[in-house]
Image (tube, rainbow, N blue to C red; front, side, top):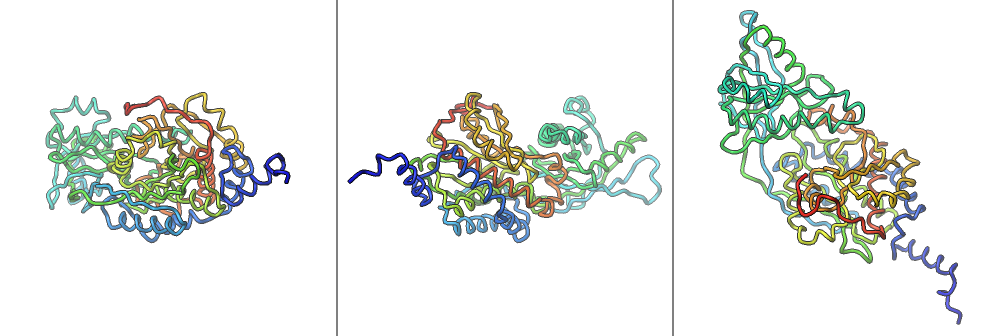
Amino acid sequence: MKSVFKSPLSLTVLASALLSAGAIAAPANDPATLAQIRDSAMKNDWAYERLADLTDLVGPRLSGSPGAAAAVEQVAAAMRKLGAKVTLQPVKVPHWVRGVETAELVDYNGRPAGITQKIVLTALGGSGATPAAGLTAPVLVVRSLAELKAKAAQVKGSIVLVDVAFDQELADRGHAGAAYGPGAGFRYIGPKMAAEMGAAAALVRSVGGANFRIPHTGVTGLVDGARIPAAAITTEDVLLLDRLLARGPVKMHLTLTPQTLPDADSFNVIADWPGTDKADEVVVVSGHLDSWDLATGANDDGTGVAGAMGVIETLKKLDLHPRRTIRMIAWMNEENGTRGGKAYFDANKDKLDKQFAAIESDSGGGRPFGFIGSVTPPMVKYFAPLKDALAPIGAGQFERRDVAGAADTGPMERAGVPVFEPMVDSSAYFNYHHTPADTLDKVNPLELKRHVAVMTSLSWFLANMEQPIGRTAHQDGEED
């Protein structure tokens, strides 16, 4: 009998049949499969529905909270329902809880008798507490760490305000990360320095845009033994203080009563969509599950988690099985410790050669224009088919970087694992970031579909690549 394996046409028919049966994976650069993934994701609301479940049913998810625990169970259940292999990786996380947070200006030049002025603020993560009745102290404004050091004699006993403005014009022109970085750096180190210099409390100007008298929280570098009260105040109230201080000294009465509790037990949610012939190699696709406690974390980082979950759902719906395992991870504790990312790295540091690549989404739900990747320059050309596949939805851009710089995948990247991120319009992201306004209504369902399309196409492409990507420049744990 004539063998069918001698016929090129029969080989094509057989391969097509095996592909449709899920027995083998399509090549990474197969245009038909990439188009199928893209189009399926663009027609599907599943990720948005999971985002609604996370934000509306669970709500805020700060590490150590009941909300964080409920989110772990919710996401794990959704991934088990898809048929993914789910593992809960234990992580010890910080457990900080917010208390009373009030402030008022009680003395300033020209103050009418009996008048005080409310200051809108919110405690920063890791903040220490005032006495239950609060404290009253003069306000000292500095605009740099150098100025803080220069005014050391005035710091002791004062409420120090670090006033660094967020550059919204820079954010509007596609550089939101660069706009955020300086203020975030001062927010982290400023209170710690003030504590070491004997300040009674530390305040920072909220790091973000959309000045509607909404405070933006965030983490600080405060440590046990030197946890002074620390808070972020609104831009409007900083400007008020600037004007009043131009008239003369100002005193504030501040009450903050947060607590730092013992570390809590929590988990990374890991869901594997097993590979075929290279199943021991892993492509991570991820977002962080925790959020700050002021709102429901829809943009930071509900969209990242829902988008990563949507990768598995899209492949399940299409019955597509990659060569390498695609591993969805919902990280725990990105916001105030990155313990989840560190735990995963520690568990895999002796087998990083099996971590083929990692994708992390943590830039909100804005429109994706493509993807970013920390690959070596010679590798860029191999991504042309993926760029072509995403071009019809306006997401065909690829920006190569030496370092992607994501938080939870950072330890892997510094050890040489290539890291990718969606390239997202984040010009409005810091309007809501770490505020009470980070809620589901801020997420555009169409952009989340694009997000899933980019994440799934990229995951599939990486999981089926023939070419080794190679290690990035930051190898062997080198710090950036």
